[in-house]
Amino acid sequence: MASSASTATPSRHAFDHRVEGMKAPKSDINALILDYLTMEGYPNAAANFSKEANLPPQQETSSIETRQEIQNLIHSGKVETAIEALNDYDPEILDDDKALHFSLLRLQLVELIRSCKAADEDITPALKFATEQLGPRAPTNPQFLEDLERTMALLLFPSDQLEPQIAALLQPSLRREAADSVNKAILERQSKRRESAIRSLVKMRAWAENTAREKGIPLPAQLDIGIHGEEADGGNGAASENGHEPMITT
Image (tube, rainbow, N blue to C red):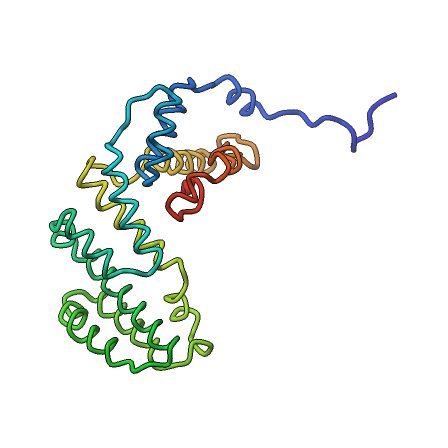
């Protein structure tokens, strides 16, 4: 009896067969994982994995721990302490990167405003900080001025009446973006790279897929990137080490 349409096995795309024939060596996969753990700031996971995979460490644990400590401070809203730690590590980073310095100072202002409003306290400290630290820098760059104006709007309205664009400043994503930018800046000083190899590969893969589709090259309707969180992060062990989401690759 012929199989019905609902039970028939769909034919596989020729591209899927080609992918199955391209198996990356385990040593290359292990090197990518170690590079990710090192570059993203997971010192314990990187040290353990390098031993298990019999690979030499890419950086000293103390170097990774420094980046992790600064990122954790930013994630927890302790921006002033993070700036001090970053300057202790390498004062030239913020001296050379004015945009990064301004973004951290703006985040520090956001945290000041958050604490003042949460405790219903005087907003004078926030105004003084904005005037002394951000005011002189804002006119040097149109984006700085726009960011400062948007941040100061937090003082004008109750938190539940803020426009979405303004309310977004109080979301954890602003801390994550700042922590990621600091991590990249430190990495550039340490290794001349701003991100892990796997991030670059994922971006290249997305570019290749888009280019192929634009040129009419036949591909499956959907391509699985092949990275699954439960398998890749070892039970979220790395995620708990520095507060990041597990295996962020885009």
